[in-house]
Image (cartoon, rainbow, N blue to C red; front, side):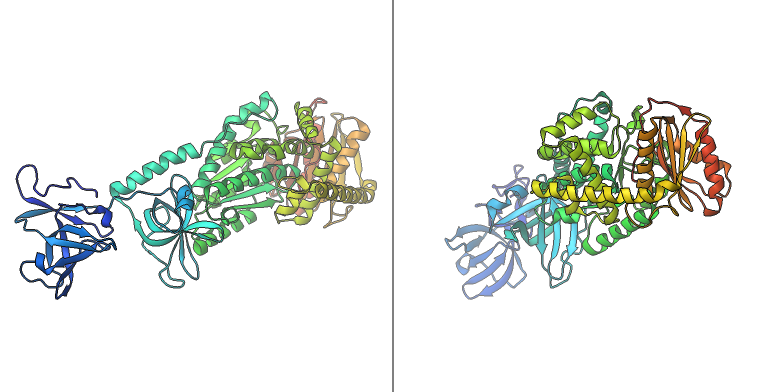
Length: 636
């Protein structure tokens, strides 16, 4: 029993007697002997009266203990006389004269969500914050988070009717109910759900906040390889890991958008598995990983308005239908450029947090005011040699380190997929070799990923991608056979595409000494098949680099777009795009990417003017045969 004074009826100053008034939720455990309580008559029988002290504390005052007559609803002061073996309670009236009332609150002893399995079939109390409210055709399901996890609490009013309609997401509550198992998961069968306020809510919230800060802290993991350039990014990645862990604990969904190429999948798949494993640790609901995490590819290397509006619409529907919070959006291998700004501004109207981990050339002034976290090697004077896949393997390990062993080969796949010339590529290849992957095996995985991503289009292809990358795959032999098949198919279709296209390749020598190759991929390459225009341009470019051994620029163009690849020429494609947009009024020029790899869009009627102006700028670029390049990104 919680009160200022319990036991002696008289106060210390000899004044009025204190009589205790039990709160409605008080139980027999809150009743003490030799203590006066305020009671209300609820029934009259020949041998006495029945009284209530609270909703669950009641008993008999025998006629022999009564003086005077009473009616239902009358108040009287009683003390506990006896509690029988069957739990029945008897009281006796006491004459206290003048008295003052002191409220008594029930003293709850909360049970941790992690201890519910040990209390199955018993009544327990859980104090926490509501993270989701979902109305089913039967009960209302409240997801409640305490310091240790999130548990579903099922409250039934009537079929399909919202129970406890005054309780909302983020309210601090106390749930009293029976711990039970349903579909191999622990949940609470709600007997009572009380919204806390004032000091009671503050105490619970403070407890949760302290636990959250500790729980969200990322794991300390040693990097897979020693790399000074990468160390500059480690603190930023820790900040992202902390935010993602906190997001999971708070019950907010995470929606990942990633570039639909090899590096994008090497980035997103490890992060997906790490977050889903952590969700499984935090949430009792076995369906929580499916509901709280979604991964979708983006064809463009930026967040298109089409993708953003779809994501926003789905998020609003999930909030309306399932009571979910609006998600955190995680951008991987895209999200750093000015082209992302309109999509980000759209989400900003709903205060949706956005995080970008990317290695495309960034526009920090444009995007960082709209981002909760931004990790990009360019902000530290590094470049795209540090691929997003390399960063995200370390990010995944900070979130859930137990999966390290199945990720050791992934950074090498990411590096080969994006043609990284990083000085540690040999270290990553060695790491992969220790897991049984030779360099040719890794190149096959990269090729297979690109091939599958092309045909999946806007589908995540979760299980197929996992099998190709061999993350979360339980059959190494099937993985190897699948990769061999897909890589052979991909190379065969690339060869067929180039057989048709190479004879239509245009060549000229630029004034700076670079070779320029152009190909009309709209008219001289197969459409709507593999490889797509970006991949086709990249494959042509690779062949010409190998054939000439000289600086090479390749342009693959269509009616209103061009994809660009360069080796040995110091280009700055984002800057060139900005200049072209200013110089060609009405050209509708946009685009970007990496410094030497990118894409441009323009209006169809100004194509010739845009490409000619682009070539002039390329001819003025400096030659640098030592420059690192990426020659086969799969930008479409």
